[in-house]
Length: 480
Ligand SMILES: [Zn+2]
Image 1 (cartoon, rainbow, N blue to C red):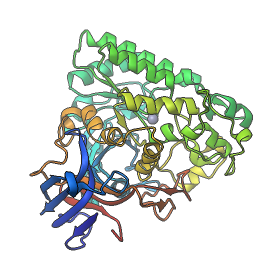
Image 2: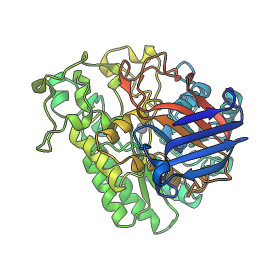
Image 3: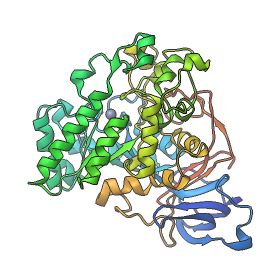
Image 4: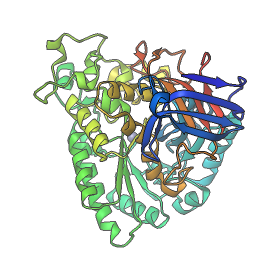
């Protein structure tokens, strides 16, 4: 494989000239993957050649892979209000380093993105950053995310938000949720809910189960997610009678039971979509005890989670605040259910829930630490660990990062609900990564201000070499 960039140029510059030969192309839009070559001139993908026969000899999916740029449905960029944790500029740089060319920012900023002027500020920050990564944003469901009155959904829709969410928290009031689903449905936009019944999770620190019991942490029961998902689905079913355009997207589902509910709802024809995160599919609750193996390594042949103490796999100190996340890391069985849901299409997308935090907010007692993982840069490496372990086909993983989220976004996805993928004549929007190249996750290697990753010190495969967004350079590895 060779990559030939004519002249090294800076982030934001139009990609003048690029030739990639003898790589593995994955194009979910056409459903095709295989050996190929491509040429970019003046930002435009001018040639895509699929190789066959002798020309394809020696090229397989274990080396350099080229795919359409990833779309993240769920990221926290913290600006305005918490620029010590992340800014739009550092968030977009982190996204590009992770292979993402489109990022949907959550509105739980300070102030919340509950009216168009806040969206304008975020867009100004994106423009000022010089990054070509496309920034999309959700508006808040409720004014100030207070859960009391609807935000200005119509004005926000006119201003260009891609949906509505009170993420960080669920929409606690069923009545408010119902009204939001109906109103957003009339506007043609989805409600993105963070499913959690807060009456069951007050003070919760860890997944309710053996690990939490042994560690003495207060449990976050799976029922809090299942119950919330069941409520949302019941209300969706109800609202659809009046508003056929109502759409629900459930984000960061983490339990086998809630995914089963979505599976059933989809089979019944409800317009519901959902995503799972890299950490919920690959990490488990035993990381709180100090284990550091992948979820599939923690699953016994009997289908139950293995015991990390009996297995002697405690490799780090317990109570690492970096593994505190909401919803919490679950059991190996739940992580396996996230993978199964991706494989069978129940989960439409992989979303990172990138949640950068300052050192101050994380370096405290486990139960006091802010929830979240800075994960947009490690997502592809974590997902490909699952692919390497034969837990997920490569093509399906890429689909869940590209066409899957595009369909969730619908008409407001940059390329529309059916993106064209790796086709000639379009502005290049792609990521090039090397599955055979390891990189070490360190604070210095992360472009995000958030260094709160439980993967610090770990080597991940799938080093991103180049990210091109809208024909412009978003990220280029220093020695690519
Ligand atoms: Zn959330």
